[in-house]
Length: 249
Image (cartoon, rainbow, N blue to C red; front, top):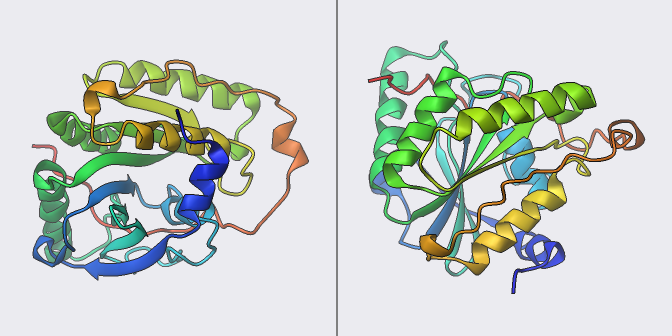
């Protein structure tokens, strides 16, 4: 029986900061990990704050390059949420760029406790070359991945739907458990319950990739929802944690 959206929401509300790491050797003890990754300004920190109902769980920043750590958050005894540094910001020192490029690639390729990725992509610029490179790392691991097309409230209903369909076509080329949806951190009615539902489904099939259920239909209903909800509680335009793009090699 799949966990309800309310069950998932209550579980995530217990999330607390655990530790930060600057190197893979500093990562905490083994337990299942759901990682969050995305380009700079994709809204990763805002999304983490929203889904956990904690405004300041993940620090948002207007200064690109400010935070360059892997941040771990405890959800329960056997589960971490992992906030990875953002990628795609070029104005960092070369040594830092190379440091994080190497760490991220090694993390995705070798971290045995990494069980799922939530990948955040700006819906106005879906699936860039850097995003696709990240997905290839996930494909190498056959890692279940759920893509959030963020900032959907900044597009018209038609534009959002077209970009969703475009992303689905791009993602269909990957041979891995992969789903995608529209999402907004400033208008939670756009995608939040859908994300809770996805996480509940995944948690029910925890540790058994063969039973992972992929939802091929991501509905986007009620165009009026873009106009009816108005909140600035979560800043969708934060710079987020940032680093240079992964290697294309």
